[in-house]
Length: 146
Ligand code: TYD
Image (cartoon, rainbow, N blue to C red; front, side):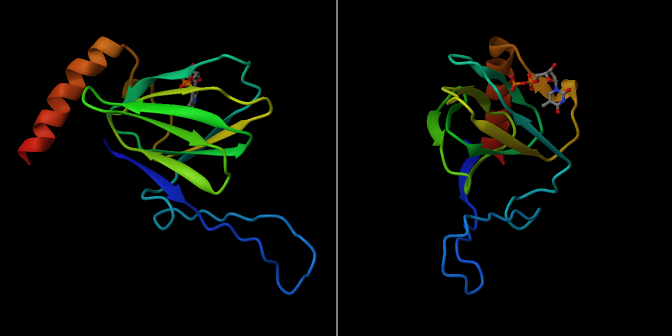
């Protein structure tokens, strides 16, 4: 499955200052994330027990970061499924094309930020799970022939 947990640079020291200064996490396109960042959006104030996502993208690549609190993500294809907890603002989850994702267990006050490789395009979404399974089987079969 085309997913990857990315550990970003977590800078905690601040030029010769002895007291704690907090964390700083820089993210640069094509260096820290494997695409040009065309869009950023974030989910905030998600009510308890809400599950979001329930879709795949045909081509879009994304990196998900939980800037505050925690959130759990399930990512799957017709062949594999993984569960990732995002609870550290210096950790990101890269999700490539044709991966079904669901986001759940948003902690109160959590902020889920998404870096995306393309502008918003509803045509790139696959929101029907059965349709996704059909398309994904063809997609992964064609990949295995390369
Ligand atoms: P959606 O991607 O379905 O959210 P989630 O997967 O987090 O549940 O988007 C929810 C709504 O927001 C949908 O009507 C499309 C709209 N939207 C935009 O207009 N621009 C965007 O960049 C995104 C991500 C969504």
